[in-house]
Amino acid sequence: MNKIKLKSVIVLNNDTQNSLAASIGISPQTLSSKINERQGSEFTQTEIKTIKEKYSLSAEEVDEIFFNNFVSLKDTKQTA
Image 1 (cartoon, rainbow, N blue to C red):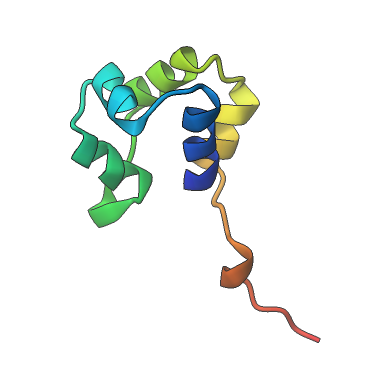
Image 2 (cartoon, rainbow, N blue to C red; image 1 turned 180 degrees about the vertical axis):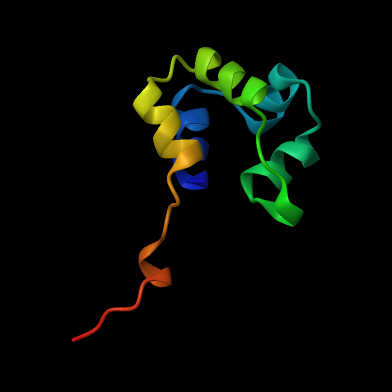
């Protein structure tokens, strides 16, 4: 999951994580766990659909956020 992209979508829509959590019917703590993928927490299909509709995300944006494994530059090893 690309948590940076999801957080940017929330901010760009003048929203908060607390508001998003309420919209998808979970606690802010549960949302945080899902965003940070703590203890195997993942978004359900229904939650992803709700987020997609709330922020008018394209299918490509949904894929970029929820289904692409995001690797930061610090996680990659450069070889010479």
